[in-house]
Image (cartoon, rainbow, N blue to C red; front, side, top):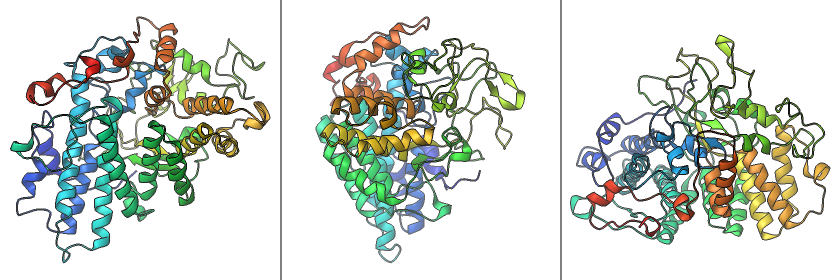
Length: 512
């Protein structure tokens, strides 16, 4: 499938050799007299900011290296990261320190994006009105603000405290101290407010993939939900519901290249197989077994209900000898069971030869791509940052937390019915308590959003990370020894490399 994005090769080339956020110069050098003069320059610069999302340490992932965000369900009770050196595995086992490369890769990748966004914001604002319309300038700046907010949200969720850099840096201004979580929080909110104000509802079909008003509203809702600002979630999602999004009619197809243009996708990180090498590895798999390094845990498998809407502990339909039979269709669409064909073109069955005995199907290629790319090679699957189903569930959770329970049923039911599951009223009943509905929403988030790298986000804000570690520890996986260490299991340390380079930067107290 041909996908849009014109990539600024010179930006990528210069940026690829940068080791940390203190050593950035790509866009600032381009700004000196020969760039950032026209709307075309501005568009190329914005494309360079989007390209930062494609880092292996961010959304393109890794098959065998420092993990990217698509592997972050391994930081929870959903997935066992058996190649523990990739990051999630050793983090769960508390076998990390500030010098662990996993942290530095993630930190640096986000600051590369922030640096590019800062350069775009600074320079696009100064382009002559003769060379760009105010409307175009507003849209391009809105995208830069949206992307900067996204990069800072990654830092705030995982590191909490970090330098807040909102201008192009010079050598003299490079050695900055860290800022508090609340200062970063406010900056994210201000950037998203600007994005919401200027971004369009949609673009021409040839420009699918750029951030829209719906994307900014939905990211703002996610951020408000993380901070337990439930009324804000309701307000942001109220606007999003009227923008024309809908649920894709085939849950399994959605997470393949055939589903990338679905009306359900609010914002995705786009990838393409071509000479530009803007590819991903998270959809790649192995020839002998699916995603050996990223195996679904049994406790996740058991959390999917039976087709009658009841847990496996209550449903007469559950067959322990055939755990896939009569289950929520999202289970089979997300997870391979022994006997499933996992490489269609080779007619190769999965024989249960992963550490957990299960394989990840969701987002995993099951045959060579139309371009002839092997299943273990980099591919062109988009990663969905926000789906409409998530918007519905965010709104449902916020309303439930506010005690406004009436609409919660319909919101959850839309997600359930699309999946082929019965509605709440037919299983759990009507007139449920606030606590019951909150539990229903939380369960729905787990099974609907599995392998979309939101589980850590959910567990941390719900305050139940320790329970998740206990479930992971009890899972029949070996050798795996999750160790919950309080806040150290919920916050990344500032990378030692950054502390060594910047005398004004001090470690998060959690890691002192």
